[in-house]
Length: 90
Image 1: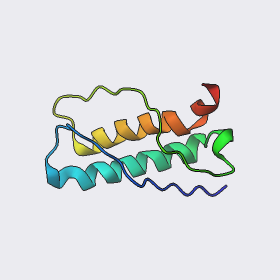
Image 2: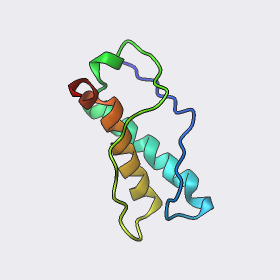
Image 3: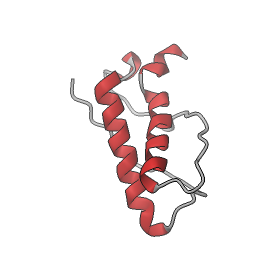
């Protein structure tokens, strides 16, 4: 199965990062989503394709002094909880 994921807009207000670190967070989000989708798949209800205007995701607790890569991983996991196999169970 091929999965094409397009995130048109990801708004991340109030993160404890500098502006120049934004691309590092973005890359980490993409990498974590790719890893999780490859390992655990996509919700059955989304496999035929489609668009979601928004994705429900659980709150995350950011670690103080967390790196942009770690923050991106946490965000990626939260987003995956909205589009991964867990989506069918809600």
